[in-house]
Image 1 (cartoon, rainbow, N blue to C red):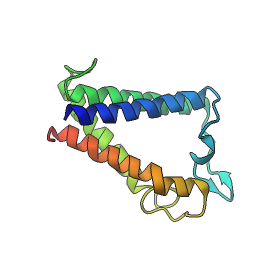
Image 2 (cartoon, one colour):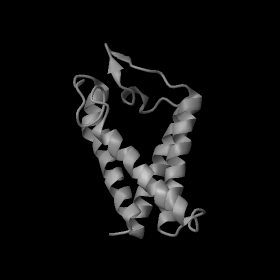
Image 3 (tube, rainbow, N blue to C red):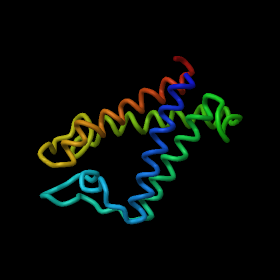
Image 4 (cartoon, rainbow, N blue to C red):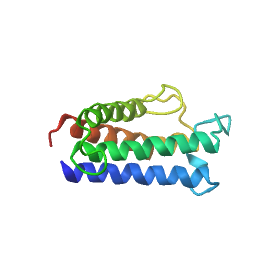
Length: 140
C-alpha cells in the first residue's frame, strides 16, 4: 500500500510541478493540454487558475501520503480518509469526462488534445482514481 501511495503522490507532485512551470510562462507540453474547438483552445487558463490546479494537485499528493501514515498529514486520519475519497472521485470523474471534449465518452476526436487525452490523460486519470480509491479503502 505504501508503494502505491508513494507512486501516486510522486505522479501528483510531478503534475503539480508542471502546472507551476506553465503558470510561470513555460511552454513545453502546453500545446496539447487544452481541449480545442475549431483548432483553438476552448478556454485559456491564466496563471492564477493554473497555480490553483498546481496547489490542488500538491494537496492531493500530501493527502494520499497522509492516508498511509507518511508526511505532514499523517495524523489527520479523518481528513486523509475523506480527502482520498474526494481525490479518487475527482480523477475517476475526469476519466469518465465531460461527454464532449475529454474522457472516455468524448465526442471530439480529431484534435491534438483528443489524441493525447485518449492515449495519456484519460488512462492516467483513471489509473490515479483507481489507485487513490484503493488507498482510500485501505486495502492493497
